[in-house]
Length: 508
Image: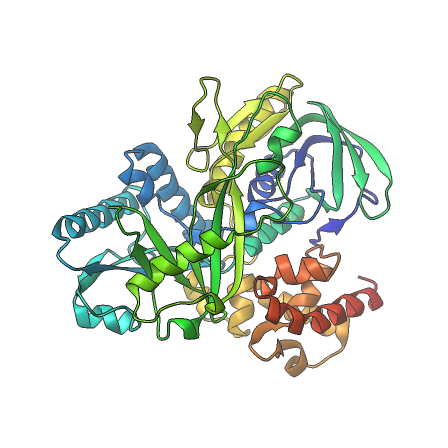
């Protein structure tokens, strides 16, 4: 049975590849390596998706912003990887996201720039061989059409809008968890609560954070995929992170919104604040870019100036003036920026790098969620060369994750829509598992755990039995995203505690 395990009990002491870090990149490296026939131990000091991977905009971005900066190669790679993720890897965890860019006032030049950019983005889609059924072509909207999709927009000066499409994830942490589960299904040992105390190119010293026991694991090669903490593990890398902040609003704050809206930042020609509707009844608003100094926190905190900036930009585009009490949650993630030898700063959230330390540790840094698969492929290629390993070719361009299926097949499933969106064809496994563990009926297992909190007891139980959740924090902050809204989290704690107790009682 495919399971992720907290702690190091019965973990192997000798493998081909040790992967340090279980964000999206580390989980992707584990999956790529194990499906090439290598033995893999993948570890994280905390939990799956504990770091930057759970703090994204939840977009599968096709690279349009990079095209605008002339970074054609990065833009094309993003578009290719978006197509792979949405059509092969995870159609069950992603969906097409309609986006409207309002056209306001007399800014004809800006409108022409926006229109040209969106059509250039469609060229990217076609060169990446992504179907128009997945991501339709952009088109111009009248004022009436624009307001039908986004009725809360400010009407004064509105000349219409541009409708385009990108990819959106059900949940970024859910993608990480599913990649990790898939790696485990192919034989990778995936262990959370396993802290690396030291690492060389051929061994790691680990401490089980549940028991305190330490052990040394021998490896042919070690891969460092710890993101903004990468420079604390190996020498020769200096990172300068930047912080990106998002707000969480209730959909009632901007009522009737059926599409994502890109709100132009005043005084700029190609910078926007995004308003992104979520399937759970919330809206995400982002994104900032602020330099971070000093020690890297486990959980970054948004600053009040960032929150105020985001509220001001969105309020300028919508009829309703947003206030601080509209914000029911906020989160921040850190992007790894690599400080180069010539003193400049290269933004590796746009382009990833694979580096080899003096001790022989392979480090992969930079990139972004959409391109995780390519980052993993490049890191495993380097690891195979470094460790002189015999391995098969990369398989992940054609490898569906657990639960993946064509959208037509997913639409025909009889299980509840929420479970299908989060688990695909594994929705039945989630429900059958909950029945077996709890002995409860479907009405209780599938009901929202609290008013306004759509998460179900069935998925919380599965988080413990199959996805390695070791405590309530794992369940509410990473297996589900209830924790993004503190008030909702408080309501869901009893259900999470009950799921933990049911799983323990059942010996899972």
